[in-house]
Length: 112
Length: 114
Image 1 (tube, chains in turn brown, red):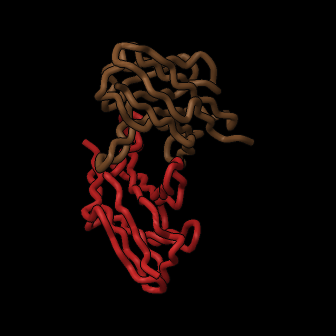
Image 2 (tube, helix red, strand yellow):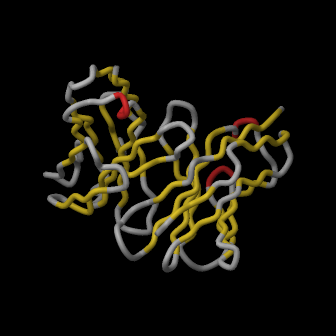
């Protein structure tokens, strides 16, 4: 049971490049989330999903897109990378509202 | 609107002493409250939660937290700190209504001094 798996762990992008951060979970959780963590700012919700085919914006969605074609996978897409997107990104999942979320190990992204 | 405040960026405590990490929240409706811990270069790990019932909840690694509705607080405590407890601690809140978001505080860095 791997839990929540994120790839890659580290990535450097040039301004204007695009990439997809992968997230998969093997716990059959309906809810999945993407957060970004900036120093001294806590975690900010980017997008979330309450089930396959259903996604919605969080607090800071600009510059990102998501899809949820299966229960297991919830990729995060950056189309035109900007320096402001330099951050650590965490994917998480939970089985229903009110239960704890399980987090991946994070992806450290630097945009130069 | 939901929000979580962790008023202390840094807490230092001597090994063996009790520790407290503070958290206050603001929500409409009944809160679900959580504490998570983050070790360097790792994801967040769940410590404990309050959903309903007894105001004192016990969690992993000897941590506990007390829910105080009148003060809208959910402080994390441990009777005797260990050096290995040194980490970044996050308080989080979710409500039953509205979007299924988990809102986090800005984190408190706990340093336990040997």
